[in-house]
Image (cartoon, rainbow, N blue to C red; front, side, top):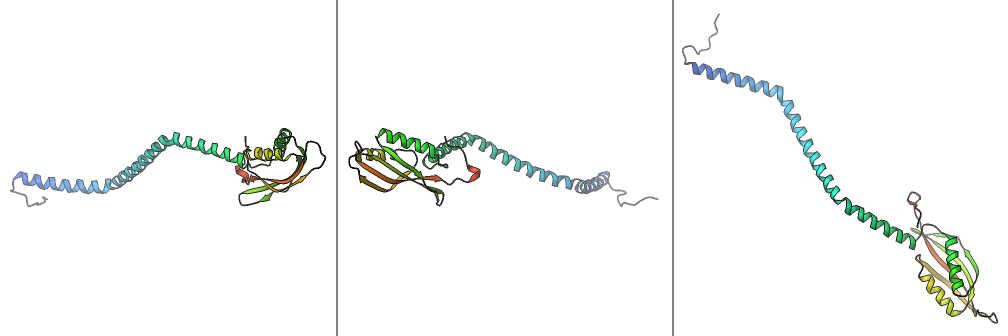
Length: 195
C-alpha cells in the first residue's frame, strides 16, 4: 500500500522543500511545547538577576557613603554628649554639692543649707529645685552667681532674698534662693552614663 502525496512526477527539490517545511513546523511545535517553560524561567531569572544587580549597586553606593555616615554619627554622638552635660539625665547631687562648696569656699561664704527638693516632670525634662542659704558679701554673691552661670549644665536662680547681717564679721549679707536645674527625661532603654 503506497501513500499518494501528489508529488509523483514533480522535481525532487519540491519534495525536499515540502519535507523541510514539515520538519520546520514539527521542530517549531516541539520547541514551543518543550522549551516555552524554560524561556519563561529564563526571563524570570533575568529579572531576578537585574534586581540583584540593582541591589548590589545600591549596596556599593552605600558602602562608599559609609565613612561619611560614620563621621556624621560621631559628630552627633559628640553633640549628644555636649547636650547631656547641659541637660544631664541624672541628678548627681553629690557632684553638684561638691562644686557649690568649692565656689562658696573660693568666695568666702558660709554655706548654711543645701536642700534638694522633689523634681517636677515637664515635657521632656524635669525641673529640680534646690533651696540654698549662705552668708557672705554682696560682691562675692555676684561673683558666685557669675561662676554658676559658667557651669556646663543649665542653672537658674529664683526667689532670691538678700538680708543684711549686723555684726557678723566679714559677712555682711545673708542670701536665700532657689537654684533650679534641669534633668533630661531620658527613656529607660536609652539611658547611658554621662562622662
